Image (spheres, rainbow, N blue to C red):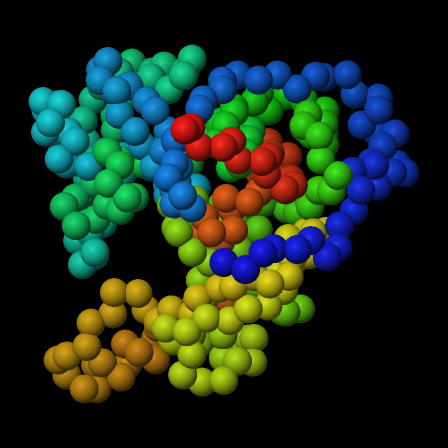
Length: 316
């Protein structure tokens, strides 16, 4: 990936100017950390979170575009956990078949622990994440503010009862602030690519920045036939502007299978294009996120973004 250069940003002090600063100055609720966890990662891939299930140590992929914390069927069997059906969460395999299997166990993450927790079991062929045992997803995040510095792989959970905007406990020369939305079990924010507005899906289990071919052509004005290619342009995250951002262009329907009735296939392709254009999206993967520090203030529905801390040198 080409070097990223910040081309526009607001100093931290500018965020607290005027009436907003006066309001926040009157508040005395201090930021309170609930938990701190050292994640693990290799290269620019997804980070994993160490947890314990019934006292067994596991690593779950940190996944901000996934609704339910889950473990794979193989993991459940290796831990000798009885798999029950009829759970509250339905998970789908790559062919769209749902299952509602789950296990019941004690779930521990750092200082946080829950007993008799129902943990969904993903179906065979329905789980990704680089070989991890499962995924740590939004249902274990939304009750807190979630802070993650991908430079150091530090994951921190904070109490949401704090002064509005009073979250920047670390040193940073610039910060981007934007509204945050939970959309269909995914963390999303408004972004701009080459001056065009899109929805950014923060997907910490994805390795790359991607957009669909129809969005590249119809929204960004790129030439037809870009599927499988890449484009380098500008990306704005709130008040932070980034140059030399490379994103890959993917098919309009991931996992779409050719074959069968020609008319049905044509209709399916048309539907995939319409779906892509109905809500133009950029998937923000770890090739960019690895360079950022994110504070997801779910309580006040804002995302704070700064450059990540320097990554520690690999041990000799």
